[in-house]
Image 1 (tube, one colour):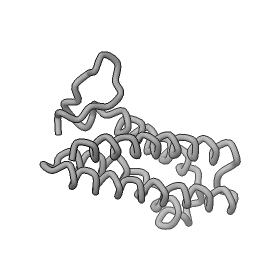
Image 2 (cartoon, one colour):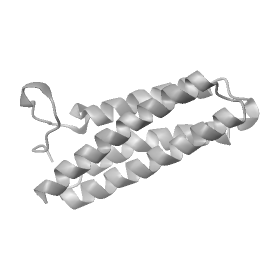
Image 3 (cartoon, helix red, strand yellow):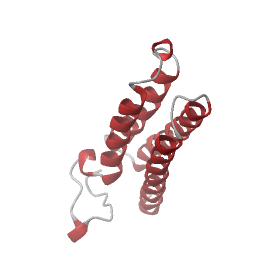
Image 4 (spheres, helix red, strand yellow):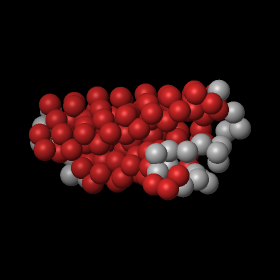
Length: 132
């Protein structure tokens, strides 16, 4: 999939999923999710904390896994799975705010990053679909 390009300056060729801005942004979201959940109650270790962390790590993992596929259709399918994980994460964040584990600032920050990644995923999917 090295021929796939994102809107990068000077038309930089994408040589690895690690070159994709959407993957990089998703990794930053994972780091933020871990930081925001570290102060959740210990009783949530296997509950909401684990759900938020699992959903967030699923996003860049599916971007990477899809990139490694030989067919654009398979790549798109993995990107759609990443979109689903993103929506799952957003739901967990909203729940965490409503039960008092996150404050409004934390919720907004995570949801804004989610929205940005969602837009990037949609753009990448559209671009791949044009090449199919």
